[in-house]
Image (cartoon, rainbow, N blue to C red; front, top):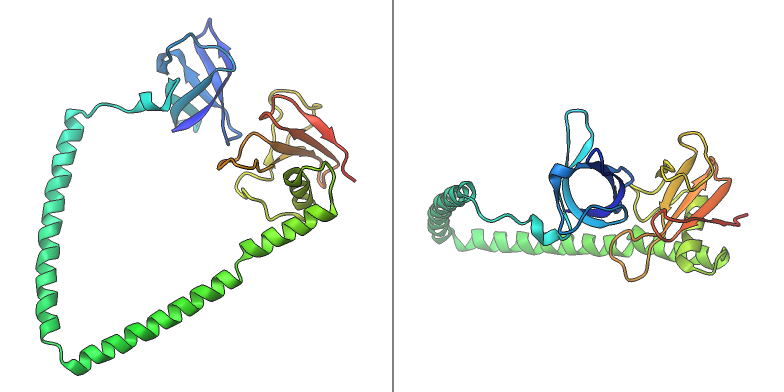
Length: 246
């Protein structure tokens, strides 16, 4: 399930594009896939599922005004599938029961010495595992990253917003970023709200929003490599303000 808002809508031709939340690539949709309770309009928030066509273009399969409307009633096919899955589950249960019975018989035939060695081996394995796990937590890169990020933010206060200043500092040092698959990717400036530049000139980075579990709507867009100009948007590319970064 994806969400976003309608970015462009051609009423005469019956198609448009959706600006997807947390995704830089827009999704095409046609009037035949729309299941809305009101007429289509630009800026309208929608929920949809999408797939790629044979040209590797993203197309919306169904566009609705609520995520609940995409839930389909059980069909006869799904009923048959459920019946088949239930039968397979019964077969698996019978197989597990048979193996369990064989395991019990084998356990009864074990000698006390064999059981003692098994217990010792389990204790040794548990001690090794928990000791290694503790070392992982003690040397977790996350804690180091947080400490480094906090220190960097305090030393490079630019806007007074801790998340914005920390993101600027991470850009300057090359990361690590909270969304490595998204941060540092090309910003295409499709809305044309930034000065027109060659493709690949702009890059975007996520500014975390406190209390939000997803990427949120705040971004910093840089221009040039290394960055020569910084722009901040707090409303998902609807508007930008230039930042003074030395």
